[in-house]
Length: 224
Image (cartoon, rainbow, N blue to C red; front, side):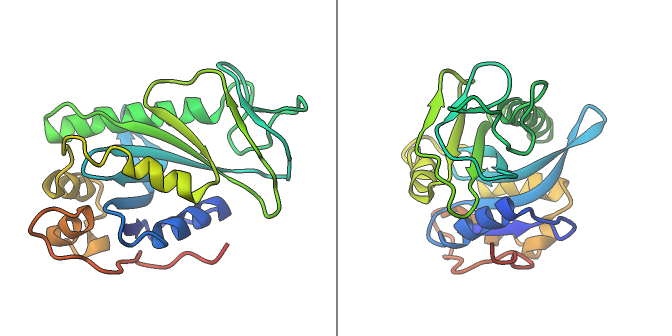
């Protein structure tokens, strides 16, 4: 995977951990752009990460706990996420008027609308909330009663994340290097890969492209 990190961004510990996951998957086709602002209604929306595979564009919210809480993580259809002992999960962006699902849905819609305008074609965008844990923290299960279609939640599990990216690999190709390069260029970040479309093609595994090998961000994130 090609990992691109906006050089103006400061990564949280949870985002640094996610960046390491991407770096552990050099053979996985895809492009990952960390910490990017996307136009939305005359302003911008900050998105933790965008992932492109040949089949999907995914908006990722990378969340971390502020304090250690153990137990099942409960995601009700309304209100804040909870721990099974009744406490509100001490996750950044989780409260009674706002929760990670609402945030990722807003950002997914912003990305969908903007990408559709830029490409002049309808763009479907998936949403993913990735919850990273503190050292030694034990969240043995996720209890999700209901959440929006095409929006998923993963509690820190590298193998599940790899499966999530692989599971649609036989579906129709939607995202080409030309489309991805065009969007990143409009975001003003194509310099992160030297303005070379062939780098994107190799990262996506397009037929005829040369393997990109180990391609890293413009600066490597600190170790978590």
